[in-house]
Amino acid sequence: MLITTSRNSIEAFNQSLPAKVKASNDLQETGCKFYKRDTALQFDYISPNNLVQSHLCFDMDVNQALFVLEDNVVPMPTLIIENKDTKKRAHFLYELNTPILMFDKASDKPKRFAYDVERGLTKLLKADENFNGVFIKNPNSSNYTVYDTGLTYDLHDLNEYVPFHLLKKQKPKYVSNLGRNCQLFDLSRHWAYANVFDFTNLKDFHFAVLEKLTQYNMGLAVVLGLKEIGYIAKSVSTWTWKNKANIVTNGKARGSVSDFFDGEWDSLTQQEKQSLGASYTNSNRQHDTEQKIVRAIDELKRQGKKITQQSIATVSGMSVLSVKRKWKQFRNYGQ
Image (cartoon, rainbow, N blue to C red; front, side):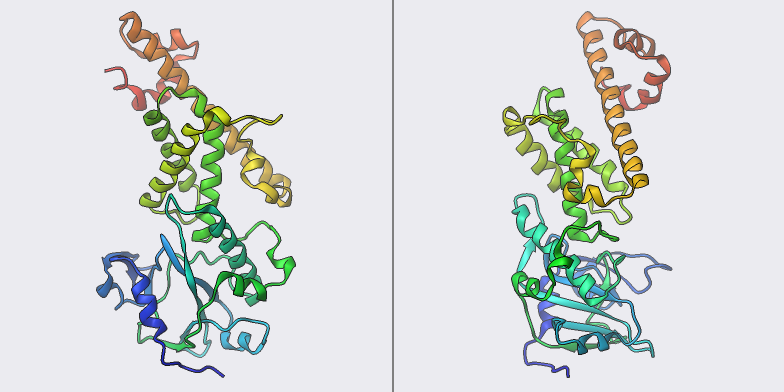
């Protein structure tokens, strides 16, 4: 039986939101945009705070979602936001006593632990594994039935509910905000380790990390915001530059594609491995081409020669066609 307590968990959710929030009444038809928080609270769908994550959110994409809670092994949500139609599907929100800080200087371990717990609870609740948590049903909307239990949790409390085999590393079918942040952090840091020695100053290195991170981000089904990408790029580039003297290969190539997925690499299919490997190889090839062009332009400037596609090709040893493909990007570099 669900009990509404004197504690107002909806108000706590509202206070966790930033000053400007993405919201929508119909994500497919009208899309979404940013509103001031008080205005955003009037919409049916709202984006939770992705920089200070105070709730774990799950999409119970099954009819009569409340029946899942009859299993006493399942933790009771803080907020249950249920459709008013006959299907009674719902979103479950678990409020955390200690929010997960997602910005650049925040510790990485809590984020990874939260991500593992989130994946485990998704399995335990039989929630939608493709749910990314970018938008949830707004508990302030009158179009839903909302149950407030007043419960809050530590991550370790939620972790106790999840059987060990559900916490073990596995390839996720979805990438939540926590997952996207960790995935992009890993991709960018491994690329940074492998390429930091190609740069002579931190400013250029930071720009290259940001550019590469943006490319990785655009490959996600749901991208992170530019501000979050900027935080990750600054953190990765600054730390790597400061510690580049201590970056060693330990007998294997820095930043290999299998390292990006740590223990999850073995769970990928051969086709997925080949696809990721091809993408990784192509990214490195593109970077090598760009570095050759930069070095050629610098050499032409040093010699006082005119910078053209042909002269760059001659100095770099590349074909004119290869230079031409990158010309728009570098045409003003030598000026």
